[in-house]
Image 1 (tube, rainbow, N blue to C red):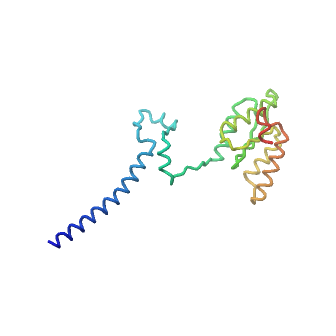
Image 2: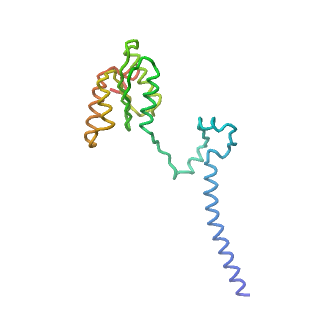
Image 3: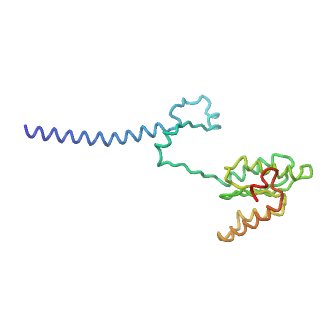
Length: 189
């Protein structure tokens, strides 16, 4: 009888241990499934359309439960610079654009044709960058096409952090000499 009780006790301990381990695992799986943005989605009929959009739907308490996966903002600076330049160049008034995106600034130097006024060109370039970047970025623009090689040098020729910071500061100071757009003049001085 005593051996049966001991065996039963060992089996119970084993079952309780397995349940707790599986319970924690199941809880993690349940949380993971709750936070999966695709959990309520049906498979789309048109997969090409699905590739063109992105969608998520969360409730505050779902994100508060997931403190380990704290999202951070990562920006592909090359892609952003490319996108900003391409959008600006869609306007026929621009001939050449050099765009540099750093961790805090966007620098845009351009050459325009005579049909586009300086104020309109500056405002268009600046608003384009501001509309594409997070709000904390400062945007500097200049129609001085002689700054294009300097912006390009920032991409290629920096040998040290000190050189980089010095050159960046010098280009920004030079760009501030140009008009900075209608509404944003006061913010970026």
